[in-house]
Each structure stands twice: as C-alpha cells, then as structure tokens.
Image (cartoon, rainbow, N blue to C red; front, top):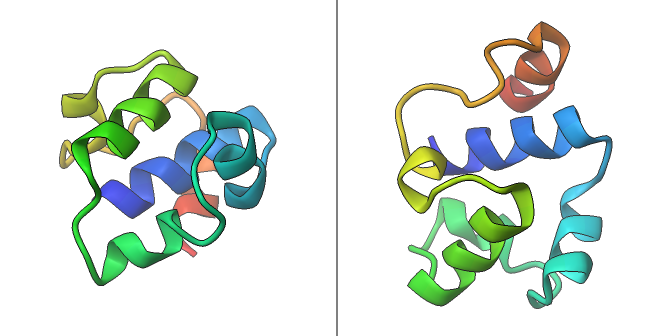
Length: 77
C-alpha cells in the first residue's frame, strides 16, 4: 500500500517519484526500492512531511487520494 499511496500522492500533485525524491532530499531510487525493502522511518517522515500527511496515512490500506479518481488510477499502474 505504501508505494500505491506515494504514487497516488505524486499523481495528485503532478510530480514524479524522481521529483519527490529530489524535493524531499531523498536519494534517487530510494522510493522505488520500497517494494523490496522497508523504508527508514526518517525517510518515510520526509515523504509524509512533503505531502502534509501523517506517516500512518502513507502506510494505510486506503489510497489517500480517493477524491481524485485519476490520481487513484495512476497509483494502480
């Protein structure tokens, strides 16, 4: 769910994951690895802070952008 939620937030905000990583001060390719490894809490906090959401919301089962069906579809891809 974490990756889907991050992708949905990126789509909703019109940015790529690469832009998110750069803007949030995260190493290039870090978020892409979250499908294989668990993120550091400090990195997860940077992403949550960037989007103005809680860390709990990022890892929740619900896709965060339920109000934006297009962003939700982008996250599923």
